[in-house]
Length: 566
Ligand code: ADP
Ligand code: MG
Image: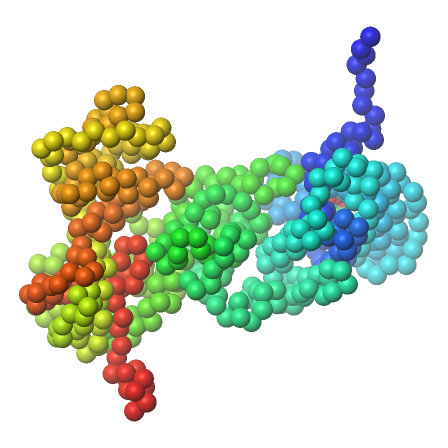
């Protein structure tokens, strides 16, 4: 006969432990977070055997009073949480009171702690308290965890090689060190010092200590206030890339977090600057009112949800984009060209032109920012001298005393894009004499249906005529000759984005601008060159094409003299 049995406490603890303690890196994370919560200014981490054999985390925090030592190892014992609403406001890392008990349930733990008087040592083996007695210890707490999963062989089997586990521990320590520049972290692996940060509060110094000179030389500081979101941190120059996202770390209100929109916005900012597989590097801090973000009450405590995902997207993208723009276009800040540039601006200039803006308020994305050219007097056009076209692709000219080598396609693309945007409502559509039927896979059909309005504004008139088939009746005039191909390109740019928004229209316009622009390799007449350069010279954001590639290379006389060693 089957009987319902109560699980014994030991088994419950072992099951629960698996939630918190999956592998050595989760042990290290919990112990370090306890040290941070304890107000430490110095944390030392040492591991051996990938952390499976040995982990020690020592801190110089407030320590644990003798009478609390046993309690600290009891499940759901925490000194940090009174009610659930404290979760974020509390600012503490741990809050479930189950890390120590879970770790102790599946390993051998020895903890020394000294809250400022006398030290004590407690030993717990597989959840059993072996001893708890007075012992000399420096102020703070030191926890040693050995033989992880020695009593749960099934879990131990899931561990990877010691090298892989050790690498994951490294990642965790790095992330916590970067998110706490004010704490000194020292990390030893197999008796070797891997890195030590100074704890002087400078993120750049943390990066230097961990990644070395070569790496940190190629980092740029970012700082932007976007509505009530503050973005700070370090990003890699476009030449500093990784093949995966391990070089991307995001902190929200000082907590290392995960959310797909974070990487997407960072990568969007680099769009056009990196090659297909390259991933940008970034250590980005977001600060926002705690009530604008939900933290998932999961043991790993890393997943967050933003109430206004789009604001987060725009904040990161703008902060990063601006910096990249400045870094790749130092010419822009150069007099007198810059004064000229400013004379073409609307009262509220595009963010890309403000060096280190202090308080940039978000602008509606579709706000018409392009100037009415006709309103400008001839005097406002900078003096232009055209020397010619090189390789049918580059225009060589002098603008306002500076030598410019202009990528004709990229420059024209920018111009067409700005003009399309200025029309703002709808691009010119052209009816097809013979409608084209296309069959689409379900994901693309969904994309088409969810963004009908954008497609219409771009100039597409389409109907669904079957389960999988759509008929294209009209197309944007600029897409003439490539109706299906252009549509596919547009859908492709939309596919990577987690939500529909005005940016989608921009992406569509970018594809159209690319189709409509003169190509590299196309011979231009001098009249056409003049027209293109004049219009381009006074259009907004001229130094980047809409995809983010540079449109020109500019050099002044002094720099040329230097190059020629005059
Ligand atoms: P939580 O961190 O969720 O409260 P833990 O199981 O990690 O739960 O720790 C239980 C309690 O033990 C903590 O609330 C804290 O009071 C105490 N504690 C643990 N580690 C330390 C430490 N390094 N320094 C001071 N107190 C600690
Ligand atoms: Mg904890």
